[in-house]
Image (cartoon, rainbow, N blue to C red; front, side, top):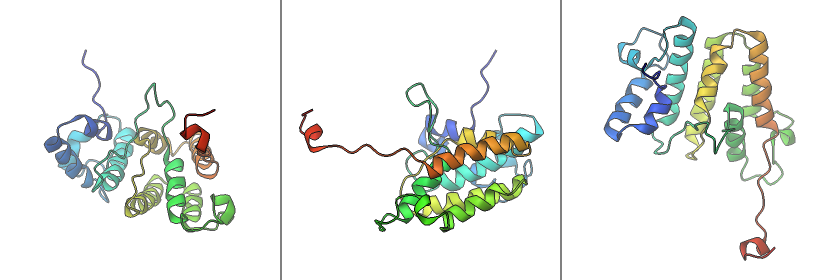
Length: 201
């Protein structure tokens, strides 16, 4: 029995450059189109279930938008060495830090009382129960990530499951809780002391 095909955001990292670029071109055609209406995107689907195709179509488009112009993969794979890759909320936290990198008084969204534009967009996202509206907000934030010129990556498979389950209130709430924790309470970066850099204790 053959193994199920991997989603395009995973396959992209494992294919020759000339093939991966064709995948990316096809993926970008999923932006602002309906699932199943773009023949070039059909080979990118990995499931036959209607809700899975709709979610995958959306994520393919978001990923294609994000990956365009970035030489490094924007999907972070879950592995044994990296069991907790950044989720969408964690990526938004990195976007926030990029936006406020020149302001020493702002270290986290808690310092802005969530009144900054990124936090407000996430708040609007959290209040929608419509998948299409959620996709629109997520895409706009991903475009901001790309515009920073800084490599920001996250787990696109996690995003797929989030959108596939968006119509389930309990699962949507659980997803938003995880994302908000990653956004507001990002783990502190460890500081390297002079002694440690010198090999001391």
